[in-house]
Structures are given as structure tokens and as C-alpha cells.
Length: 267
Image 1 (cartoon, rainbow, N blue to C red):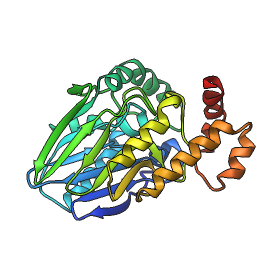
Image 2 (cartoon, rainbow, N blue to C red):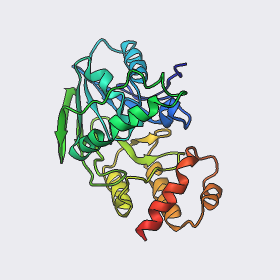
Image 3 (tube, rainbow, N blue to C red):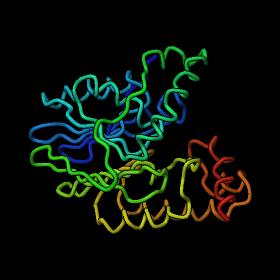
């Protein structure tokens, strides 16, 4: 059964959608953001499968006749990236950092095949095919949507080697990808943990009114400060139980053993 989108309108021309929850069947609760300009639409992180990306396309049809001409991937993790093929098949240009492209090429085919072998996931991943971005960059690109303009830039390795951030200066809004999670435990499996604090401080320096995290509700600069506190707590923690006590109610606790191992390895 296809889950329902949950919608947050953060500006007159910007929507954030999630399927909620913390399971693969709902894209692990990842956020997908759409920006409607005068001439075109930009979608950021179109979920884990084409069927979910189509939900976003359907929701956009109720808001604008304009096509999705651009898709940006904030990083290569499948809960954010595998839906891109849906929009690419309809003519959208998909943009990502070079390291994101490389990780997609290396990892996505095997992950898709493995998930098709899981009976409960076979139907969900049946029509998923690997898709590599057509626009690849290392530093930054600008996307002009007409009246609204997005600067897409690499803040350095952080959550992954190929992170990018999307800044909408006119809207005073930043789409952070998984550099920020709100109410979700963080998956550090590909993280440069030594750079995470610097990445968050860089986001804060942008001075935006609204930040859209990779998972969880959009908010103001306070969600950046909470992310810094979270990183510090994980870095100092000695057990999964300690983290659970410190952050009761946080979703995606399944990543905690790996997360603690990543920090311990960095010490």
C-alpha cells in the first residue's frame, strides 16, 4: 500500500513533504522539498522509489502547471535519491556532487537487487532502476527558476563525502539534507564526523529564517543548535541505552549501534 504524504508549506512557493515514520517503506521519514518559480519547479531529494516521487508530482499538479525541470540530490543515500529516476524520465535534469554520483554508481545497483530479494520489499522496488545525475559538480551551481534562484553548494564532507546544501536567498530558506535531522537519530555510516560541527556552523552563518532538515520538521536556527548538542552527546556516549535516555522519542534508533561505532573509531 502506498503511504500518504504529509505536507508542510514553509513559503508561498516552497513545500516540504514526508511519508513519516522510520521504516524503509516510508523512505525512513526523509523530507522532499519542492520550490516553484515563475518558469519551472525544483525538487530536492525525491524519496526512495519512483512510486513515492510520483506522489510528489501529483501534489505539485494541484499547485502549478509548471514542470519539474530540476532535481537536486543532497547526498547519495537511497531514501533521498532513488526517486530521481522518475523525474529524469519526464525530462528533469538531475544534479549532484561528483562524490554523490560516484557513490550512487557504486552502491545503488546492488542495494536495489538486494531489496528485490526481500519478500516484503519486492513490490516496492520492482520498478526501481539506478539513475545517475546528468549535472555533476564539485563546488557550486546556480539554478534559476524565474523569480526564485537556488544556489546549490558543497559545504565539504559531512554526512557523506558528496553532501550539498540548497540555499534560497530570496526565501531565506536552506535545505540541509542529512547534515541536520530533527527528532531522528543520525546515520553516521558515511560521515566525516570530524567535520560535522564545522558544517552546522556553516549553515548557521547563512542566516536563514528556515532550515529544512533531511528528516523531521523544518524549523529555525534552533534546530541547528540541537543538532550540535546531539553530535556532542553521541561523541561522548558509551552505550546505546545512554543515547536513548538522552533523546527519548527520537526515531530511527536502529542506526545507533553503527553510529556509536563510527564516533568511537574517530577518537
